[in-house]
Length: 132
Image 1 (tube, rainbow, N blue to C red):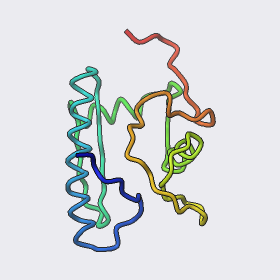
Image 2 (image 1 turned 45 degrees about the vertical axis):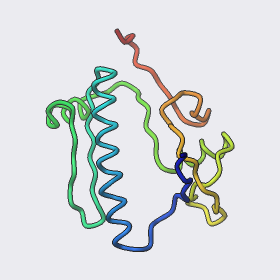
Image 3 (image 1 turned 90 degrees about the vertical axis):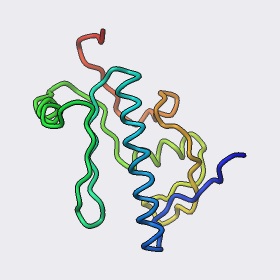
Image 4 (image 1 turned 60 degrees about the horizontal axis):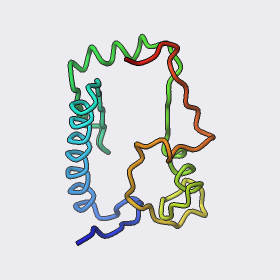
């Protein structure tokens, strides 16, 4: 049995929002762990909830990953919610809440980790040295 498509918008009920946050936070951390193991990469995930409580996951030492990030000078990919919404709209996905007033669609829970979902408007750059 397939999962029900949900509308991506703020959950109004406080209790349901907290339950959803807890479940999705765990799911996000699980995906980060899986990505780090499967692809042998370093991951640092930082989440602040609505009351500024910090949750973090790091595949290695968080301080080392953050230091590496702050010292990184090569061009790199960076996305915001607006970038993702624009990409999904251009690809014909419906359902994402838009920062613009006209957005009343709902997002299909599709993976965003494939290059076919990237918009030409997103700036993707590669480092000058090839990856091993």
